[in-house]
Amino acid sequence: MKSGKIILFILAAFSLIFSFLFFLGAGGQTGSAGYIWFAVGLAAVGFILIFFATRMGAASDAAQNVTVNIDLPGEVGMDTIKCTSCGGTLSEKDVKLVAGAPVVTCPFCGTTYQLTEAPKW
Image (cartoon, rainbow, N blue to C red):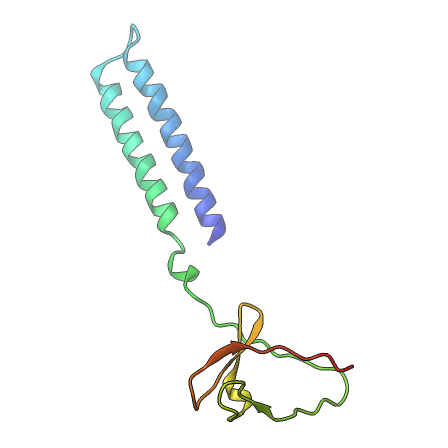
């Protein structure tokens, strides 16, 4: 899709450049009113090409789902996590990754907070 956009922009640039040249040529000694209409037509084609080039690929830029799998080295055991507000037991489905940080939402009291790890010393 990216190469199609580039080609449309290049064709639009050529169309607009030649439109300008025909417009200038209409004012010369051998110019005629037909050059002006041709210049207007080329300018319209150039702007239409720019319109389609900017709209091309808009559907493919939609939101994408990203799945993050964390591979921890060695044997890692998960302790039970308790809510800091109500003390309810949280499961792994209550932990979500938001903007690169683990965020916990308690299913019992609805509290949402960032999960932090306490130092092990």
